[in-house]
Image (cartoon, rainbow, N blue to C red; front, side, top):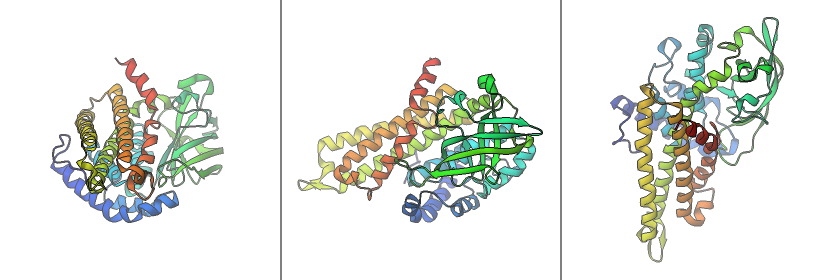
Length: 380
């Protein structure tokens, strides 16, 4: 399990919460990990249990059914999920989508959706990426044409996390295609809307237990009350939320790095070669020592980021640097840990194989790491 005894970002309340989160994943998730991997999604019943246990959307204020806690409680959930290798899309809902509604939603929208997001009755997704538009959000082609007192949405999205299970989708669309970034708006579309359709659950390299889908919008009509915030402000809303999204990715990546190191250490001390554990070999010990040093630095940096974020001091450049550093670290640790396992690491029955597969995408989503370098370079 994660050793948090020397962490600097958390207090006693966070530690008590962590113990309940850890127990929840041990009892409610661990028995189902293989089944979720095979079935390609996590059923809503698990979301409902998580909501009942207080794991969903901790920052939602009490007036909307939440606990009104700080982002560090979100981080506790994200760390424990990543370490336990739980594939549910909780962090998307709690760390990303909640803040769109809190910061830009109308009072009616908040009252309608937030309480059910907290309980797990409502699963959410955000539809940004298209076949021809990924990190460059200004290139989206989905349109939302003004029609009477509402909008008609047409277009398609792909690589959408929670796409198969989402009840509510924030759709990034152009309400004025001639205005570039100023023509982008965000609209709330419920999965029951006529003209909305889900495509296949995409066949991915990793994260098999998390559903990722194509979504289609064919003359989907929504009312004016589906507009999130102001028309034409969507691009700026998206940019404003990126820091927390990238920090959230960094949190999970760091916990996965620790998991990889722990799996490597455990295997090296048990695996026998030439009559002794492979940990007895100097090259192996030094390899693991180097890994441990890098993970140690990662935890110190992550705590620094979390403390700055809850103090509203973490800058977009710092958040991008965190995403870059921790996801690169995750890939390195997972790859080196798999190498420690030798041929066994290539077998799917060993957890490191799944952890290695799942780690590859974190350098892509939330903005590719190449884009992170561009963001950072502009701020130095």
